[in-house]
Image 1 (cartoon, rainbow, N blue to C red):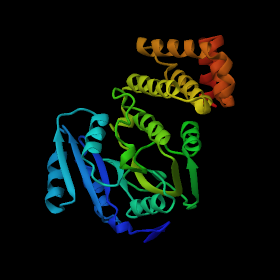
Image 2 (image 1 turned 90 degrees about the vertical axis):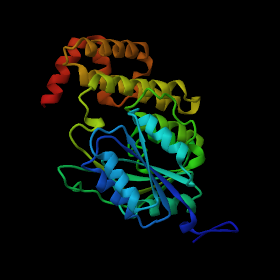
Image 3 (image 1 turned 120 degrees about the horizontal axis):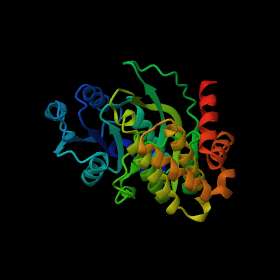
Length: 329
């Protein structure tokens, strides 16, 4: 029970809508759904969207829905992650909304903690840390300090773009539902969609609260979206997202948006510099052009990226030689 002004709020009366994107995750979906069922905050609905899976994902989802009336299953033709999230948002009826990827999981008290902070601090967004799990083990060493950080919109956006400690994921956060409508700036962007949508949501929020505990379990696996071999499409998406953020940034955050944009260009060149594919060469040429155009802003980058950017501008061949040496040593 929380007392806000003269109003008493019982957390048990606050409903959370949890949107799970599921595409060919039959092997991992039970772990995900069971982690939701195990939540200490029990007033939730799980909107599980089977995005045209070709394995048994849909059947597994249906079997869970038969066992628990709080689980809603939607089957649709494959349309991609953005479409799934938009569909889930349109169906959500809770006061707060969370997102989980179908091959990940959450700690049993994650939503209770996030909701408690959202209510106590009257924040539209409440978030925590995530920890990486791999090789079938939940074994990343993660120390929880439980430190609380409360930020206004501008402070949170600057931290989001700097990436120093705030994860850009949607999945380690809880949002007031009224923030989410029409929050996607570009529906063609898949990779970095989380960052792009969070940019919009953080702009809309007046207050954001963070607690340093690692409640979200990010499970790495072969063939997951983030490990996809389509490096060229992924790189183009990242660049497009950062450019979109820069184009939609007000003066007070433009420096951070510019740094994020330039950093993405440097990272793209670094990741593709040894590829001989024409697509890679084209992306590198475009990134070099952008870095040359923004030469006066190169100073915004951290030292290692600043050096890389200047080497690229001077000579891509020189950059490649230096970067090869850097990677080896």
